Length: 128
Image 1 (tube, rainbow, N blue to C red):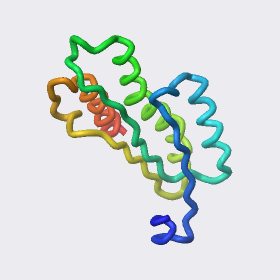
Image 2: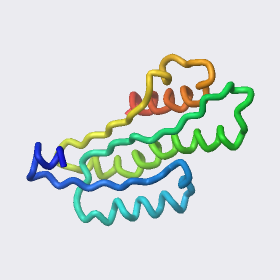
Image 3: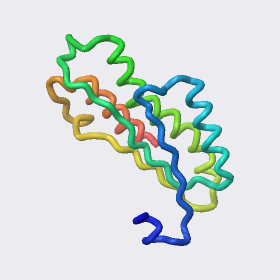
């Protein structure tokens, strides 16, 4: 609503996914199909995905580590990889916004895995 007030001539579309429970290869294919089905150029990607568990590293279950790694890194990686070729072909500027955390720069006790995933996002962003 607020975006439409600022720029009524701009078309806004978005897809919301719960990556906390939905991060399989088939899920990505479905999501990419929906993105490609918009029928218009996508010019902005906002990667604002993440989950966290506050737990000492040595007590964190392996399945929770895997889930956090997939949610916090693979979603950003695959969405960016899927859209970047079309961004580079556009005759206009495109924008990728990757939301991370200060914990990606400076870790904290109990949030080591989370901080490592956000460091990944920061590093990927800087490399692009």
